[in-house]
Structure formats: C-alpha cells, structure tokens
Amino acid sequence: METIKNYIEENRERFLEELFDLIRIPSVSSKAENKNDMFRAAEFIRDQLLKAGADKAEVYKTDGHPVIYGEKIIGDDKPTVLVYGHYDVQPAEPLEKWDSDPFEPEIREGKIYARGADDDKGQLFMHLKAFEFMMRTETLPCNIKFMIEGEEEIGSPNLKIFCQKYKNMLASDVILVSDTTMIARDIPSITVGLRGLSYMEVEVTGPDRDLHSGLYGGAVVNPVNVLSKMIASLTDENNRVTIKGFYDDVLEATDEERKELAKRPFNIDEYKKSINVDEVTGEVGYTTIERLGIRPSLDVNGIWGGYTGEGAKTILPSKASAKISMRLVPNQKSKKIDKLFEEHFKSIAPEGVKVKVRSLHSGEGYVAPVDSPAYLAASKACEDTFGKKPIPVRSGGSIPVVADFEEVLGVKSILLGFGLDSDAIHSPNENYPLYNFFKGIETIPLFFKYFAEMK
Ligand code: BES
Ligand code: MN
Ligand code: MN
Image (tube, rainbow, N blue to C red; front, side):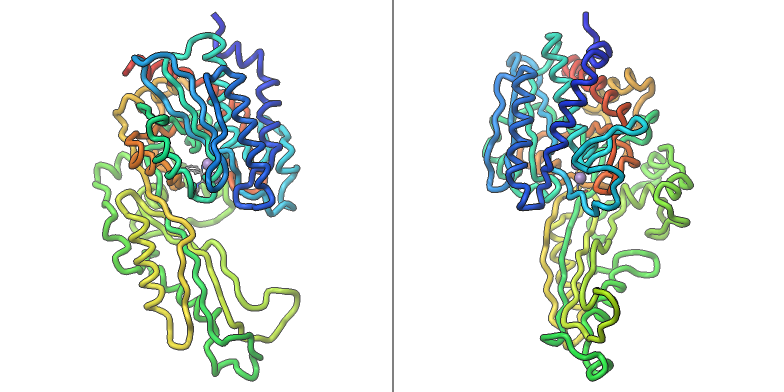
C-alpha cells in the first residue's frame, strides 16, 4: 500500500508548485485593491478541493471576503472533522526589508520565503494535500468538511454570521485548525490556549489647528504630550495595567498549573537572541512563559501626530492618535474590556482636550482540554511522526473565531499547528521550513485515523 511518506516523495515538487501558485495571489484582506485577488484565491482552493476528491466545494459570498466550503461524506456512522484555515494574509510592507519578493516564493536553506508561507497558506495547504492522499489511497476514515475563510487577519467580521447561517451544514465532532506554532522542529506541541483581544484606536484633540510652538508653546495644551502621558499611565511600575477592573475576571493560575507550565522547554537566552534584545520585561512576579500564556497585556501598536516629515517644523499639533491592543486571557470578556478601557481613558484626560475612543476589533480567548479524543488523537499522531509526545502549550496569539465556533457551533477546536516562532509571520521574510510543511502532511492523516478509532 502507498504510504504517506512515499506519496510525499513522489509528489513533492507538485505540492510545492501548487502551494506557490496560491502564494502568488496577493490575498491581503485589509486592502481594497486586492478584493479581486480574494476571489481568485478562494476559487483556487475550491478547485484544489474538487481535484482532491471532495463531493462538493463552493465559494460562498459574504458581506466581506468569500468563504470556501467543501466536504467529503463517507457515512452517517463516521465522525466528522471540520478543517478551518484562512487564505488571507497580512500586508507585506515594509517591502524594502524583504530579501525576495513577498509574493514570489523562493526556497532558501530549506525554507519557503513568502507572505503567507506559514500564516496560513502553507499550513492550510498541508490539509489539502493530506486530504488528497487519503482520497487517492481510499483511507479517509472520517467525514471531512472544510471551511476556509478570507478575513482572519482583519478579525473575521463575517465568519460568525456564516457559522450561524450554515450551522447544520457545518455540524461536526471537532474543528481541526493548523494556524499556530510548535515549540521547535524536534519538540512537537499542541496549543491548548489562545489569548483574546481588544484592539482600540484613540484620538486626542487640542486646538482646532496646528499652532506656532513659539507663540503658543507652554501656554496651550499639546495633544501629543498629553497622549504620551496618558499612555504611560496605562501601566504601572510593576508593568501591571492600571485600568480599573482590568484584572477582575482573570483566573489566577494555581501553583500546580504554574508548575506544569514551567515544564515546557524554554531557553530565555535563545529567546532574547531570536529578537535581538538584551533583556525581557513584563508583569513583575511572572515568568516569560506565564506573561505570554496566562497573563493579559497592553501594547501600543502605532502612534502618530504632529510633524514627522523631514527637518524641523515648529508646531504645536492639533491632534495625536494611537492604536492600542490588549491581549486577554480566557474568562476576560473583550466587550467588557473595551468598555473599561474607554471609560478609563476618558477619565484620565486632562481639561482642554477632546478624546475619542473606538474599538477596531475584539475577540475572546480559548482553552482546550488535554484529555479529549481530539487531543489524544493529535498527541498520538505527533508521537508517531516526531517520535516524541507533544507538549500542551498556551500560546500568546489570538484566533478569535475559535471561541465563536464553540459558542455558535457548540464544537471544540484542536489546534494542531506546525509553524515555528522563527517563521516571522506578519514580519518581513516570513518563511516556512519545508521540514515542517511535509511533517504536517505526514501527521494529519494519522490524526484522522486515531480520531476515528477513538470515536
Ligand atoms: N495564526 C495567527 C495567530 C497565532 C499565531 C496564534 C501563532 C498562535 C500562534 C493569526 O493569523 C493571527 O495573526 N491572529 C491575529 C488576530 C487578529 C488579527 C484578530 C493576532 O493574533 O494578532
Ligand atoms: Mn493565522
Ligand atoms: Mn496572522
């Protein structure tokens, strides 16, 4: 019988060529100019599903970018796995920081370099090829459904509605997602926690126009000075967030849980080296792993205002703005945090400025059990292909739709990602090691096999 290893060996070049064709479509969900590319990418994936042997696969229009749904049903008595992924990518900018064209994939030192190479085109492609293998060899042991969206990187504004509308069609026993990382190429892990997100934009306005900083400076409120002070006050000397009520719903980890977390291999020196910093910081009293996995955080993502062009221009600016995100832990509710943030931010504004606050997106965190059939199946599959039992980890990243799936579809997700922290997702020179790509293709059919056996 044809094994997955042989199948990969025989089809290796074709798999890569097909993935590269998908990567070449610049499906940047945040840009209006790429609207048509979103359709092209969706149709490409639909065709891949049909060629691989899906009973049906269709591109569904939404109020935003399209969703692809496809399925292969083998029997009412079989368990059903719904595969989720996203074909949209982050913008590639700044382009000058890339060593090769972000939308013309290139293999260097065993890695595919391109926007979306990992997040999430490379990872979702592993599922298409694992499905193709199971169809060719008639070894698909479960019903399989695919839901691939094009708006993950902009907060999935239409996917919850899609799930509500097609709840019956999407019925499944588990949702399988490859959009996370593993600890290292030889240390498999399964993500059992994701953080939520509240993402705000603020604007502080003083005088109704820029003023001469000599004629007015020192006598009139300066919105950039004010915004800087307001932002600085959002965290205290222990790097704790000062917003009233911010920590109210955070579940404190028990000593037992903290001991478990500390077991995961983690080298702080390598971590510092990987991002070129001499020191790490964060909430006092917690380790780096805890700061990422079980503690919320607040960060300014961008700040602007006043004169930033060449040379000096002596003005007192009229406006200052910032984008501020808060990563939340399970049990914190993003809508509540949005409100607490807005109230707090307005309350700390000094006299003489107007403050606007709006939410750009919000989503909930997620925790998954380590004893579910899906977890055990994923664990066994990784053990087979990596030769080691995977470690459960809590990731600092967010995939807000995973909590929506639980709420709307009533189904838990298994986060079986094969990326690495060093893949530079969202950054210049995003990459995905060929090793991880092919290991993923090898591991996925085993997940299906063990999941079917356990159900
Ligand atoms: N795939 C990532 C999330 C991720 C990466 C989770 C690595 C865990 C490990 C996803 O595409 C992403 O970037 N999510 C955004 C969410 C936002 C746009 C709503 C994030 O985390 O910033
Ligand atoms: Mn992703
Ligand atoms: Mn992403």
